Image 1 (cartoon, helix red, strand yellow):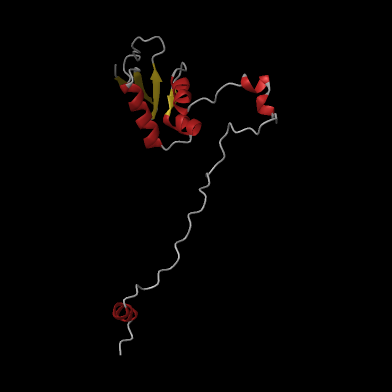
Image 2: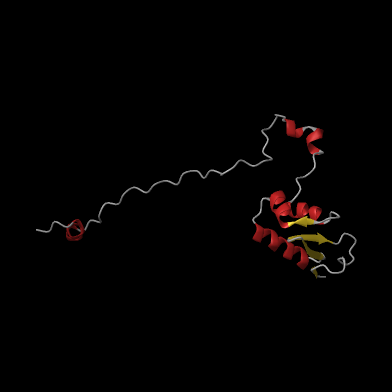
Length: 135
């Protein structure tokens, strides 16, 4: 006598019983959309003052703002302003160079300072300074 269920069902000609298929559940969104507003309700974001609020500044715009200052910015200042790691900040500087910005680097008293040209011209460093100018 066979005790294996597959063999028994083969002998009787009946297919083995299948487990019921689970019905798919309704998919949920991880977050609700920001612009979803119920019909007929108004919120503080619908007011005219909320529409005039400035858009948040991007981190790369913050870096450019730091670099455009007269004294430029150190790597530590850019890291503190953006929350990026130092290697990410250096990569952002490389990205600015690839986009056509003129980024210069000077080292004084052991601290490297980066600057970017504001008028589209080249920035030249004072004589005797370690300078990297890329156009």
